[in-house]
Image (cartoon, rainbow, N blue to C red; front, side, top):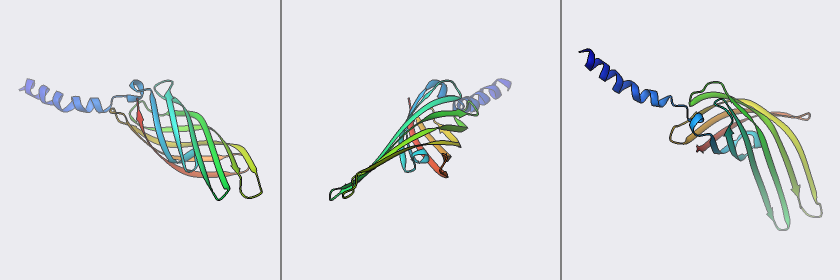
Length: 160
């Protein structure tokens, strides 16, 4: 009877152990699309884990519009650090970094461009499936000396 109980427990618990596998330790890279977030509308990002609970991230976003001789564009480049509070696949995290934005317009007779830097920081929650799917939700605090802005972010991606 004891042998049957041990076998039943092993069959039930072994799949649960695989759910706790730490994919950040196995798949160190991820490529994501963030809607909202640190670059306001969207950003494409790459993250490389530098430990089981820390990763370095770089992202880029470009927006452009034009017609009839008028054009406007904005480029956002971001980089920062993400810290995970646990080693599990589903974990709260905290990110912080810097973003550089440059914009330009060629509207009518005017040729103007401007650039500025701001910082971002905020909490989030990430789920990494062992198969390679990544989901992250975050609240980003965007700030510099001139403004303070709170903006949500929703991230989908793949790990490899």
